[in-house]
Image (tube, rainbow, N blue to C red; front, side):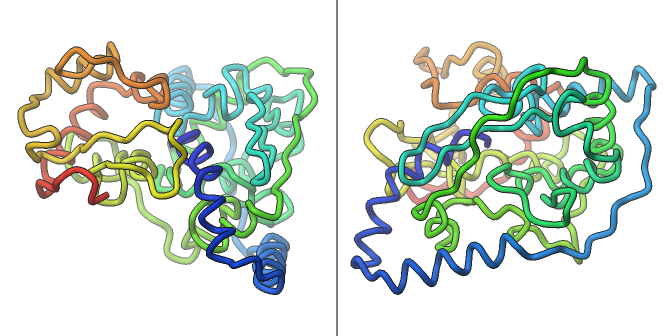
Length: 304
């Protein structure tokens, strides 16, 4: 999810530096590879689409932007799309979601270019985005991607300058070691894109939604300390139906967590958890995510 790996990267940094053993040649080769990859122009055509003004489409776009894609999160583009809060990651970089309203970068993009950006992580010039986690939601159906664009177009223009976006040397090395995503388009299969599906309360749809959780809870969703994370980062919970996870939970417990931020034992979630976005999941999305989590093999906490 947006924000989860940002803080983690700072903790991972020391591990990477030690692993590199201070070898300047290694660092140079990794940064050069990053820079070269970011200059690549992807031959992905711009879809011939046009924004909709249908109220139902705009409502869908608002929902997706605020929940599944989390575009409106404060660490992304903000509720007004005028730009997010700056994230100072020290030697990793200084990252700020830009103003994508009609008063900012949104005015420079066609509707089709924005849809391509959402689904492929590719900018107007054909090069990769930096940092924006399009690989988490590139599975969105075309209709949902266009709905987000339509909602964005319906928002008032915001006159606000873009904040700093700088990927520093350590951020480039982390990206090349697959520890932190800075080079977004490189993580997406453009020839065989991940296919979405209409929303349904099924494990299959829940599996797509769960991609937003794997960065924190691990590919096996069993949680445990995030490798290399500093002590300030809380240990993610086990989301599998194990004794150390959600075995004793039912859907009501899960829904209560999303609504109130309270676990079954009454303990409040740490603010590190992006509850603002997941709390906006609708009934179908909640049931789908829960259905998928219940299909996971019980895995002891910490095996990620």
